[in-house]
Amino acid sequence: MSSVTFLGTGGGRMVVLNQLRKSGGFWLKLDDLNILHDPGPGSLVMIHQLGLKPRDLDAIILSHRHIDHSCDVNVVTEAMTGGGFTPRGHLIAPSDCFNSDPVILQYVRPFVEINEIKKGMEITLKDITMKFPVENMHPVETYGVIYTFRSGRLGYIPDTEYFPGLVTAYEGVDYLILNVVRMKTDKRIRHLNMDEAAELINMIRPKKAILTHFGLQVLKSSPEHQAKLISEKTGVEVIAARDGMTVNFKNGNVNNSNV
Ligand SMILES: [Zn+2]
Image 1 (cartoon, rainbow, N blue to C red):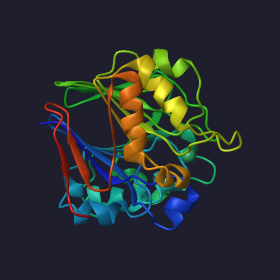
Image 2 (image 1 turned 30 degrees about the vertical axis):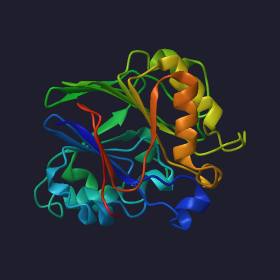
Image 3 (image 1 turned 180 degrees about the vertical axis):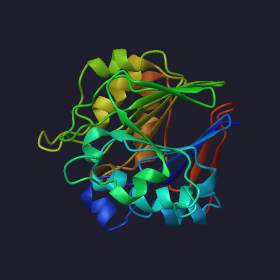
C-alpha cells in the first residue's frame, strides 16, 4: 500500500515559528520505497511520535534550502544511517543546499549517496522513478517532483510563484500535493495563493489533490473549507492535510492519527 503521512502542515514564518501547525514535511511510502520530503523543524520528533523508523528511509529530499523545509535534514540523515555508522540511502537536494552557506553539513555527507537536483533529472530507486520536471519560481533554487509508482503518478509542487509552465510540467499526475502558503499574493515572497492553487488543480485535474504547508492567512480561512470550495468549483477531489494525517493512494482512505 502506498501512502503519504504528513509530519507537519505548517508553512510561512508565523505558523512555523509559533508551531501553530507542525513543520516536519511528509513521509512517502511508495510500494517498497520510503522517502522523507522537506524535513523542517520538528521532523525527527514527529517521525518518532508517529511510530515511523528513520532507518527505514531510502532517501531524504529537500525541495529547497529554506529553513521550514530543511532544518532537520542533518539530524534525520544521522538517524537514517545509525549515527553515520551504517552509511546508506540518498540525500537529494538542489546544489545551493551543498554550496555557499550549506544547510547540509559536511560531516553527514559521507553517510549517504548525494544527488544534486537539476531540472529534468530522473532517478530510479527500487523501481520507483522520480523526475524533477521544472525549476520553481522562488527566491532560492527549488524543485518539485513527480513519482511514478505502481498505483499511479504523484506530483509535489513545493513553494513557488504561479507560472503557467507548472501545468505542463505536472500534466497527467494522478495525485497532487501542493504547498499553499497564502490567501493573497505578496510578490516579495513568491508563494502560491489559494486561487492559483485552484487554477492549477483545475488545469492539471488529478484524481485527488492535497493542500498543505499553510501560512497564517490560510489557517484563518480554514484549509478544509478552502479545499471544499475548490472541489465544488473544479469537480476534483481536494483535501486539506492535517498534522499526522495519512492518505492511502490506492483506495483514497484518510486516517487521522491523534497528534
Ligand atoms: Zn520557501
